[in-house]
Structure formats: C-alpha cells, structure tokens
Length: 93
Image 1 (spheres, one colour):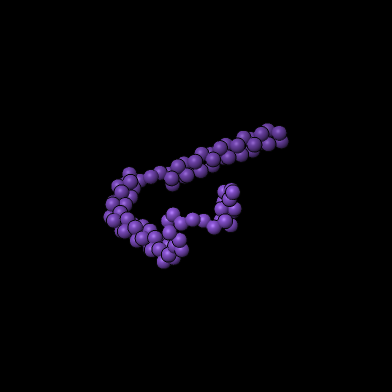
Image 2: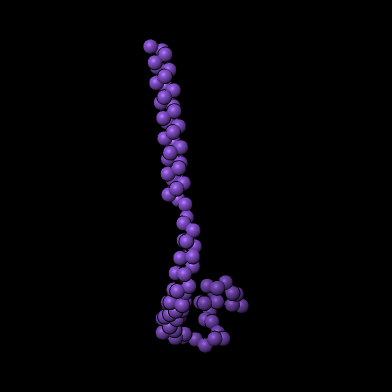
C-alpha cells in the first residue's frame, strides 16, 4: 500500500511540474512581440502625427479663448484696496 501511495505522489508531482512548465511556455508565446509590430506602430504614429498636433493646438487655443472672455477689472499696476492688502498680509501703516 505504501509503495502505491509513493508512486501516486511522485506521478502527481511530475504532472504538477509539467503543467507549470506548459503554462510558462503558453504565456511566453502569448506575450512575444511580433517583429513587424514596431514598424506598424511607427507608421501609425507618422500618419496621425499632424492630426494629433492640430487637435492639441486647437484644444489649447479654445481654452485660451475661453479665458479671454472675462476682461480684467483693473489695470496691470493698479493699487490694491486695504482689504486686499490685509488679506495678502501686507502691512497698511
């Protein structure tokens, strides 16, 4: 009886090791990068580069224009009120 139990344990270990190696082979094959992938990625980037630049610049320009709709109340070097100076921590002696 002990002999058969030992054989079953050894066979179980062999099957476990073999299945682990098979899983490693499957995952390593699945994650391999095909040699043509970098070339295809570069072609896609080159073909879309101008469109991406235009989209980014258009979005930035629209954001700038959205901020320009609110004119500033005071001139660049206008003086601050006493409350503004107090909030800023400037002494008003």
